[in-house]
Structures are given as structure tokens and as C-alpha cells.
Length: 276
Image (tube, rainbow, N blue to C red; front, top):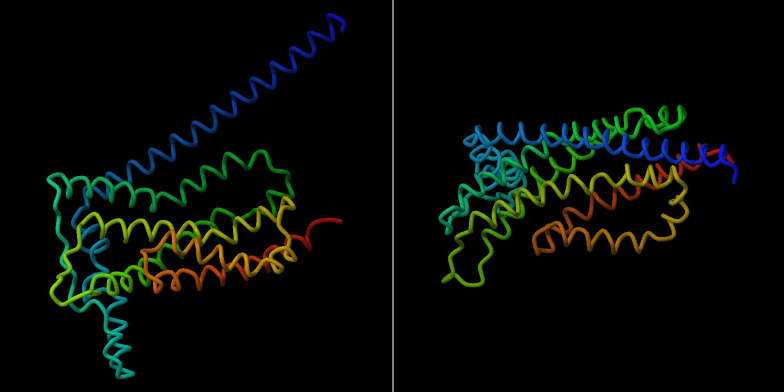
């Protein structure tokens, strides 16, 4: 190799290295801004303790909660008293010295993460967008909005339906009348926050299918052939993100399977748009 060719090769390698480190530095900027957004919103949630706990986190176990009142109204209309849920709120107890303070910190961070999620998606989109071709940018227009709406739909579905029904079922379940239920604060918080956040994430299934179909990994034919496998995976996923009761798993599994069927249509549309 001539000296000039060697210099040219070293120059190109140097440019690639510079490009890699510049991209890494740019990614770090997006991650830092996302972390700052979560941190600031977590501080706001920490300060607004009464609102976050009394009117959000602890509300699903109370009779005044929207879902509980709606079920009681339905119970009156169809004369089925069993549908009237959470009329006797479960007792929440704390058994750790620093339990309430630790719970306060954890819940504040989770609330900050959930509220900041659309902004985090926007920062991620800003990082990825320059690498896309014009047609890819056009096809992905509105991706942040759609992804954010799906996440918030999953969070809302879990908070307003899964959480109160799960609390009613598990909080009132007894193996014997001689055993009273006193729910640990950490157990209650984990059930409400983790299930809510996890459901928001799994509602992103159509977005994942869209991008996998865009790069040619998924096809509608493949998804149709593997409906049974998908059903088993959905049941397993529902069992992971929900408390250990079949009722909650069914509640999560039904919309997830519906999203799977919607995703087949999305994959079909993406494949139809791809040039032969």
C-alpha cells in the first residue's frame, strides 16, 4: 500500500472514529435531558405528596374512585350486588421504620418517569431522525404522538380497570374468616405502580410490529400462522406483569390479543407499501 493510500485510509478511520464519538456524545445529551425531565417531575411529585397518594395511588381502593362508583351504579341497574367493588377499603399498614419515606421516593420517581415518558420518546426520536431517509421520515411522521398515546392508553387501562378490580379481588380474598387482611404498604404500591407502568409498555406492541415489519423481520403471514404461539406468549406476559390471579391476567390478555390482531393489519399495510 502506497503512503498516500495509507494516509487516506487512516483519515477515513479517524473520521469514522470521530463520527462514532460525536454520536455517542449526542446520545449522552439526549439521555441527560431525559433524566433531568424525570428528576424535575419526580421532585414535583414528591412535593405534591398529598395529591399523588390520596387522590392517585391510594384512590383505587376507595369507594369514591370513578371505577368503583361506576361498577356500583351498574350493580344497581342489573341487580347484581357482587359488582359493587371496593366499598370496604383494605387496610394499608407500614411495618418498616423508613418504609413510608422510601415509598414516597420510589413513587415520586415512577410518577416522574410516567409523566416524562412522551418527552423521553421525543428525545429518542430527535436522536434517530437524522439517520433516516426522507421517505422513512415521512412514513414515521407522528410516531412520537402515536407511541405516547398507546403508552398512556395502557397506563389508563391498568389504573382505571385492572388496579381497582385486582385490589378488590386480592384485598377481600380470605382463606378463613379468622384471618384478617392487612396489606403491607410496599405490596400495595408495587401492585398499583408496577402493573400500571408495565401495562403501558406492553401496549406499545403495534409500534414494535410496525418497525419490525418496516425492516422486513415480521410479515402478516408469519403473524397469522403463529396466532397460537402469540396467544401463549400473551398469557405468559400477562402473568408476569399482573398479580398472581387469573382474573387480572385475563383483563390484561384480552386487550393485548386485540392489539396483536391490530398489529397484523399494520404489518400488512407496511408490507404493501414496501417496493418489490
